[in-house]
Length: 328
Image 1 (cartoon, one colour):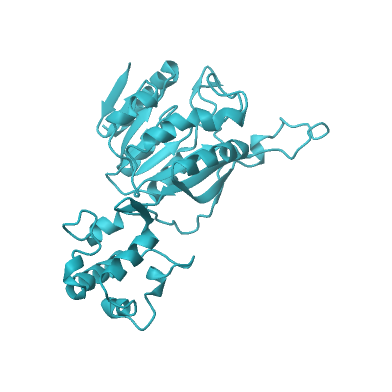
Image 2: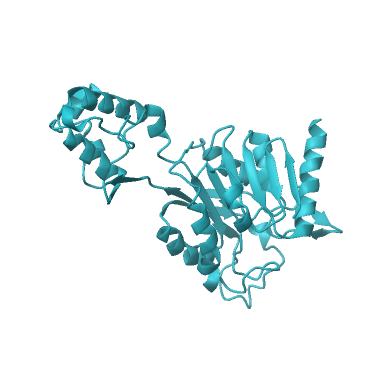
């Protein structure tokens, strides 16, 4: 097995299934694996078997991911539709479907409108998923919404006192403790006030309140880590109009593309910046030419990437080395 490490870049010429156990917990997973379109050696002929193919990976991720992790799943529309139920099975929550619009140049000169039986396809999807935290009370599993209300009711304090706890007008905190679909997670500052109030005025017999370990209440910093990071860039929507790679960014060998599914650096850097901070860990289990690794170098993240094709791996490593040599 070939490996390469430099600064915060860790690249493995191996099946990612062999490596997950050695990688630190990720803040971001970039999943750009098989599409089920027979697009490269090892790809499935059809998307029908994609869910079963991905399941061992999705199951392995569960050992390391947290509520702080965002998954970006790349694929075709039908390929993603096949895998979505499997992601749900393992607790991934759909957030948003982003459309990569490659533009008309993607099919220019390659489509016969007299014989084609559907509109020319110039898109891929990159679907955002997150993980909801689960709280255990005895043998009962509660969602965050359920747990918040459960913990407050344990205090013996009436619900309207939550407004006093947060120093707001009457009913302003209802959204934190409602049972309905209007619920949303209290911001860290509001959560800290609720916790302090509950542990000051709640019944002594039930303390500590809002604690996972039964010893110390959750801190504001710990609470913030119970949801995926997200920073919405101004002017960016869920339709990404970025041309396919036709310039010097496309890696070629004798005028032939080394990897047909190479992604634009712009898009990889976008999704990583949206869902992580500097110093965070990014996984790319199907890394190809290591565009994710380059994005991590440019945005100061740590990355762990696996690519099983040795020739593609070597070309990707050369790409990383060339970039590092330019910096030195």
